[in-house]
Image 1 (cartoon, rainbow, N blue to C red):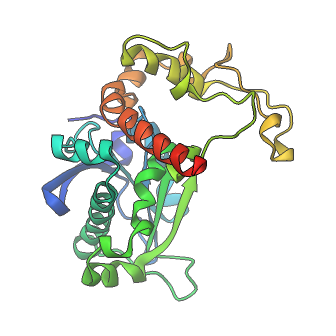
Image 2: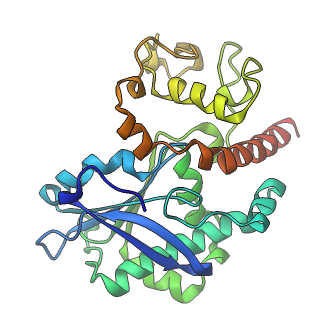
Length: 275
């Protein structure tokens, strides 16, 4: 089982949700309040939920219950079956529909077993905030993608509790958008310089994604105003201890899932863009 570096602020759990899927998560627990909000965070590619562990320390001060769950194939959570990966590679909608059902089932678990406060009439306290970080948005957005993915009784149960969905720093591809058409734009997953084993690619990816860039003009909201270097001399993970890296980074899970995900979505976006 995974271990956290802030055990005094959270507990570890595994819950079985729809389709007999086990979800591993850490939980700050409920604050001493009857109107707290439960913030459920889904991590991105290659990083698991432990990257957000420091948030547990501050949860109760903010009248929050913070829940960090590990997405499919990441430590403690059920791996994708061969059938599911085949659906992913084929771009079948059922792959995303399963995510929606499992997310809804997870929220149901908290409502029915954790006495989760109902969303207030002004929608400012209680209930759930569901947040996807980076590629985690490909999972969280599934809950909004297909109305038929969640059975009506389950939908009617969770609807009065869902305050909002936070789309935090998503890559274009996770939302089904093509990357910028700017000629100088850089996208690591289609970089011809990265050849060889996928494991080596994710070493490059981790540097790229955690580098500190000097963007030229982000206020312009134009692609030409961004810094497209493959990496910088200063990058966050370079300062992590070996223990932090072992706790938070899971290249194997990313290779097995996200690379297939990215290739499938990228191909679909390109096909639709060129249609």
